[in-house]
Image (cartoon, rainbow, N blue to C red; front, side, top):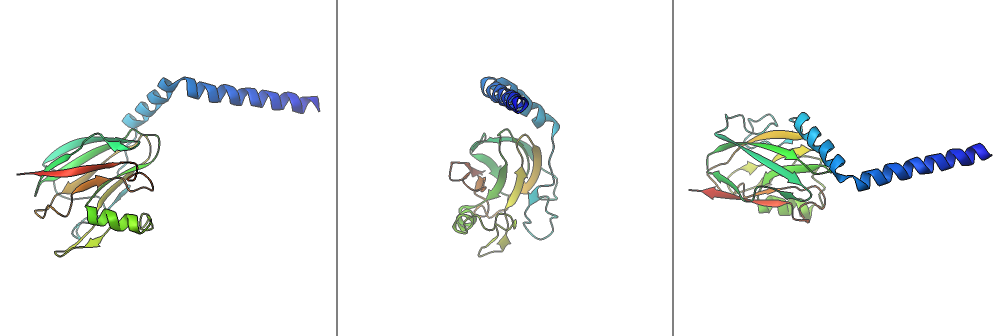
Length: 185
């Protein structure tokens, strides 16, 4: 019986030591995340098809430019996202947070539909809404903590189709994870 008590005490001490080290040394955690960010590339978490001829990897056009975006709990470091109608932009997105996030190019109508569904369509990759002109789906890049990925988005001449960048994982948008898309002339 004393062996079990000693073993139990040892496990409790080790658990307490591990827990206190993680809390008292936030720099070590940050360094680990930063190392993961630079070594992990994710490009296979893309959902979305804008005009039927994309293969779930965003636009197939050559980008006019590249924009780096950092996302965390619960914001994007770029707001507004400045684009030109007709422009093709490659977004290189890094999740510097500690939980999964998504980079979703959408508009308020589709965001509202998604929220009204109670996030039910999240795993289906839908996000589609019918507009007066055509059926449009969001561009979506889903990244685990520490991952970096890219998505190529062509912004159409109809500037009402893509007006927001959001994370629609449950609770994230509600916590303020949103950026405006601003079109320049």
